[in-house]
Amino acid sequence: MPDFSRGAAYVDGQLVPIAEAKISLLDWGFLHSDATYDVAHVWKGKFFRLDDHVERFLSGMGKLHMSIPHSHDDLRSILVDCVRASGLREAYVEMVCTRGFPKPGSRDPRTCTNQFFAFAIPFVWIANPQKQTEGLHLIVSRWQRIPPESVDPTVKNYHWLDMVMGLFEAYDRGGETTVVVDTRGNLVEGPGFNIFAVKGRTFTTPVRGVLEGITRRTVIEMASEYGYEVVQRNLPAEEARTADEVFVTSTAGGIMPITKIDGRAIGSGTRGPVTQELQKGYWALHEDPHHTFKIDYE
Ligand SMILES: Cc1ncc(COP(=O)(O)O)c(C=O)c1O
Image (cartoon, rainbow, N blue to C red; front, side):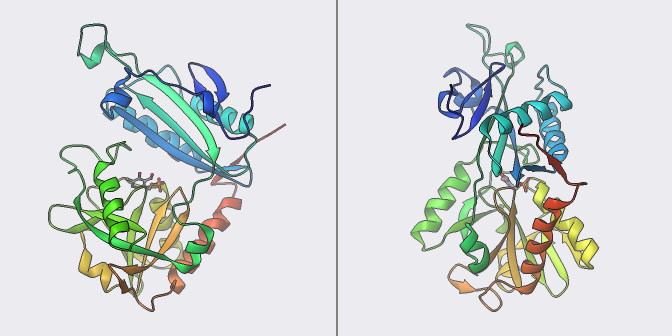
């Protein structure tokens, strides 16, 4: 019996244990970061906002001139199959479309057969449950995010060298994570998350150069329900430093407090009441049938 206990993958139309999942060395997804992907999650045996993730994925593929012989519903069922095979009740579920490789001797991307892969592995936290209450120390990076004129950030992509270099810089400077900036020093996004600053009853979040995160969208929707105002515009670093609260949002962990930026406390230096309210609301939505899809593991 194959061992799916550490995760399951869908490769070449087959479900395989995650450790056995392989792609071709020649795939441009690997050689040129020529790929798009999406990550959804399963919590207590239910997918959260699965259709939103699949929709964003298909829209990204369209922008990159990619196509695969799978419909929205096919993708949903492949992802469900990966989770069911793994048996995981809390899972990180990724779908990937790579360029594939061109005909021998050619460099014409139109000759590539795009490839689709998916996998489910145990849930991944950007901030572990302890840090979800304590908050993270964020470093404003000197690295700039690859500009939106070069790589469309609304297409979820593997152009992560700026953010990975930012992480090394953050660890060197005593921080726990990083946010990269645009050419003018405005905060943009971090390795796998969007950022919000709270001042009074207003949330500000960067509008340009960012992935439109599904968690970011969830926060924007909750804000309107709870009577907060959300402003999407440039977010200068100084504004985040002097905010009442700062938090980051990601499928990999939800809503995570930032209690220190570049060694200085934000607000009281502890997780603030707004962040706490949003965290509570976010996890409560994981029980809401409008946002969830229950997996049948039998
Ligand atoms: C660059 C980047 N920004 C933001 C996010 C957050 O998006 P979501 O809330 O959909 O997970 C991610 C997620 O991985 C990301 O890679």
